[in-house]
Length: 167
Image (cartoon, rainbow, N blue to C red; front, top):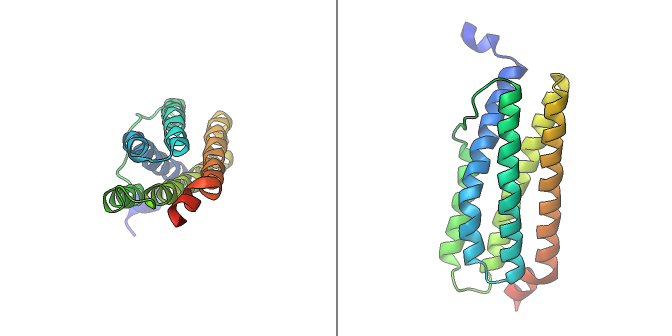
C-alpha cells in the first residue's frame, strides 16, 4: 500500500462519499422530469414531481455541507447511481405504452431511494463520529425525506400501480 493511501482517513472517506451522493443527486434531478413525463398514473407523475422539488433542496443541503467543511461542491462520477438510472431508462424504453411501465419505473425509483437511504445513513454516522453536528442535522433531514419518499412509493405501488400492471 502506498504511503498516500495509508494516510487517508474517515474525513477523506466522508468527502469522497459526499462527492458521490452530490453527483447522484444531480443525475437524479435530470432523470425525474423524464420519469414524470413517461408516467401513466397521475399519482406517480405527482410523486416524481414532488421528489424533484425535494431533490433540489437536498442538493442545496449538500452544498451547505461542502461549505461547512470548506471544500468545493463537486461531484465524483458514481457508477452505482449511473447503473440504477440506466436501468430506469431501459424500463422506460422497453415498456413504453405498456401497463407495466409505471410498475417498472416505480421499482427503479425505489432502487434509487434505497441507494440514497444507504448513503445518507452512512454519511450521517460518519459525521457523528467526526463531531460534525451541524452536518449530522442536515444529513438527517435528507435521510428522513428519502425514507418518506420510499414509503410513499411503496404505498403507491401497493394501492394502484402494481394492480394496474397485473390487470
